[in-house]
Length: 111
Image (tube, rainbow, N blue to C red):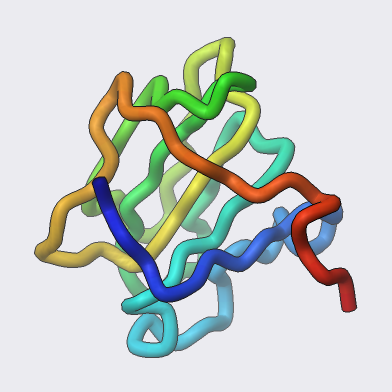
């Protein structure tokens, strides 16, 4: 299981569109961005590659990719409902079939 200090959630149209664009990869090395709902990811305009996992409604990993370079589009399988992304790292990443615990909207503080 992969452990992270923090997951941030992008759940509006604009925050999902922006994703990690215009961010510093060093700031995100111990964090993940959860995009919900999300069936595809773009890396257009990114300055660094991403690791991406697509998650179904039961919070199981249905596709997992590492080191996706800038200026690409990655479409998840049909059952994908959520995407998780982080700057590419030399550490473990999610495997297909792995089940995740993602916080429900009611479990998070909204600012």
